[in-house]
Image 1 (cartoon, helix red, strand yellow):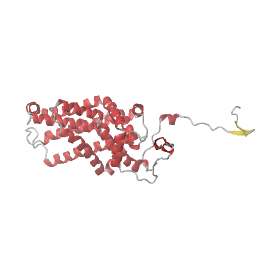
Image 2 (spheres, one colour):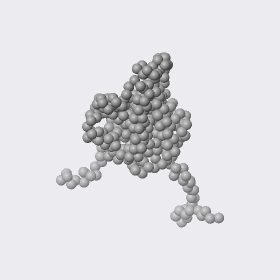
Image 3 (cartoon, helix red, strand yellow):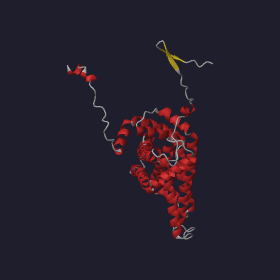
Image 4 (cartoon, helix red, strand yellow):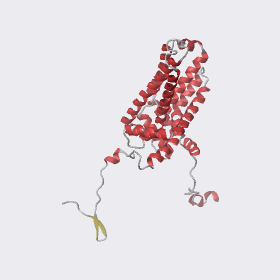
Length: 337
């Protein structure tokens, strides 16, 4: 019978054609997303758990900035509007939700070393390399502890400064504000707006490269930001495109969210805890890693050094033992004096 035939188990399979063209990145993304769906859920939940303090900080930063604007702009009372106007309250809630999700997924605001651990996992998914979720996440978080913390605090400081600058600009540029209206010429306000937008976009672009570069190369903090800045300038338009794609993918579900339904709100939080950071991070990895490969990994003149495990660096080179044949047997030469 064919069912019990030995050929059923010994016949070679189709195999892989060595001349087969690699699948497009768009197709590979969904293949990896589906094949790694359960590990993605697991590592996403672990990362969000470690990022709860940062998420709370970003939420407080947004709310505090709005409160400062309400304090300095005497032409409007935001507190009363939010309390009385249901539509305004919904817009504020959605803006807060978008701000927190977007800037913790890109990530301008992140948990530093833990995002480095997440990035290593996502890079392994992209390269289709084996990975042990918890072990590799913790190991890479520890390996990049100092550099990750420095990057986290620099980005946090820069992000808060830009956020406060944007708030101050809106207060001064508001023509209905009786205190500051007309104090600064319009062309200077225009230049200030352009500079603020440029640095906000630049900071967001930098964070496309900082953590993938951190887990790929042995670089100093100076090299990390310098290389990222160069790649931001070289690939400005594609970088802008991927940032807009991330913003669109986050903004669409947030905009359609019925804000006064607490069940829906709970579903959104569960979705964020289960998938969103990894989903956005994987999209960015499929864009960033080929750029790193082209301009740094395959470029001998690039300012970098390949990442090596500390155990391999500290492991002493083994001495080669010599010997000779004696009576048909291999005998090692004695190393005793």
